[in-house]
Length: 527
Image (cartoon, rainbow, N blue to C red; front, side):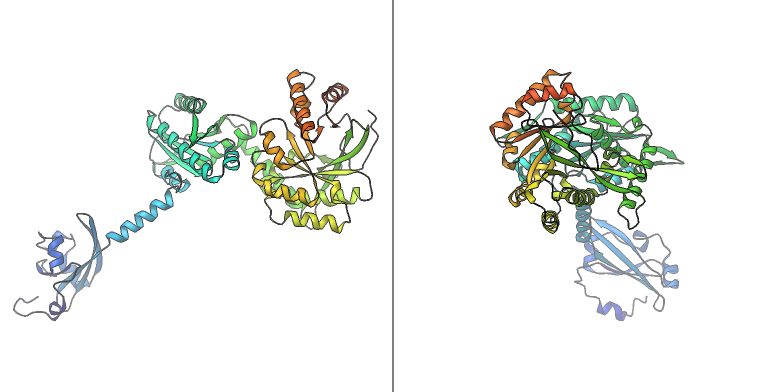
C-alpha cells in the first residue's frame, strides 16, 4: 500500500474503535493499527506475529480465515481478509470473552448436578470416554429407603440430606489413595469412578471402606437425624481396541449390577459375578414380547384371574377371595412370579390390574363375597386411576364396599397417602399387603385408616421353625386389634401353620391349606 497516498479505507476506520483493527502489506509489514489494537498488541510489528501464513498468498487468493488470540483475561477472534485489488490484508478483532464465559457457564450447568454440585450423568459419560487409562472401575450406589425420608420429613429436608450425603461421598473420595471422581446420577443414586491398577484388592478395599463409613454415620439436618445404608453395583475392566479404551458399557453394567443386587437383597454386586446375564436379557425380551402379545388385538396367550379363598376363623366360613393373575398359554398356567417384574419395568401393571378387575367383577356379581384386588404404585400415580376404577364398578352395578384394595407395603407406598385416603373416602375397603417386615410403620398405618393387615408371608411360612416369628405375628395382631383392624395370615400351607396362626389371634387365614387359587370360586374348606 503506497505510503504517500492515504487509502480511502483508512480514512473511514475510526481510531477509537473499541475492537482491534490492523492492515498489513503483501510483505507482512504492519501499515495501520488503531488504539484498541495497540492496547492488546503493543509489540506487534509484522504479520508473522499473528499468523504463520504467507501474506502474498492470502492476498493473491483473497483468503478469509481467523485465529484466536488471548490477552490477559480477554479472548479475541481475529478475522483476516485478503484484498487483491489494493494488495493488503485487513485484520479486525472481536472480543468474545463474554461469549466464552457464557458458553463455559452453560457447559458447567449441563454437566453439573444443580443440588449437590457434583458431576451428573453427562459428566460421568464424558469422563469415561476421555480417560485414556489402563483400567477403570465404576461404583453406582443407591441410598436405601430414601423415599421414606422424603415422605416423612418433606422434599426440602430430603434435599438437605442429599447435600450432606454428597459431602460425605466427596470426603470419602478425597481420602482414597487412588484418583476418583464423584457424581450424582439422579434422585438418590450416586457414582464413584476410580482409576486403579490392581482391581481385586482395590475394589474390596473401597467396598469395605464405603460400608464401614455408613455403618458408623448418622446424617443430621437441624434437629432430625437418620441412619442411611447403601446398595452398590460395580463394573470394571474397560477393553482395549487399538490405542483406544472402550468403556461405553461401564455405566450400563454398573447399573445392571445395582439392580440385580437390589433384587437379590445383596449389599453389593460386581457385574462380572452375574451369571448368565445375556440369557436373562433374552428371557426378559421373551416376556416383554409375550406381554405385548397379550394386550394385542389377537393374543395367542391370555391373562386369567384366579381366586384364592380367605377363611374367617371366628365365623368358620370363607367370606372373601383374593383376585390373582395368571397367564394361560394353552394348557400351561404361568405364575405371576415369572412376569410381574417385567410388567413393572414396561409399565404394564395398570393394564393387568384393569383386566383382573374386569374378570373379578364378572365373577363376584350377585354373590355374597368380598374380593380383594392388588393395586400398585403405578396404579396410584395415575391421576385417572380413581375415576376409572369407580366408573368401572358403577357400570357393573357392583357394591363398592365389597371391593378390598390390597396395597403392597413398600418404600413408595407412603408417598400416595392422599390418593389412598381418597379411595377410602369413596367406600373401598383397604388392606396393607406384606406387613411385618422391611418398611412397616405403625404410625403411618394409622393415617391410612385401613380395614385389613395382611401379615407378610415370610413370617407365616416359617412360624413352625422360628418361635420369634410367632411372637411378631402376635404383636401385630395385638396392635391391629387395638386400632380396630382385622388381620389376615397368608401362606398357610399346612395344618401345623394353620393351628399356630389360629392361636396367635389372627382373624383370617389364606393359603394352599385353605384352598389353591382357581379360576372358579370354591368354598369347600372346613376348619
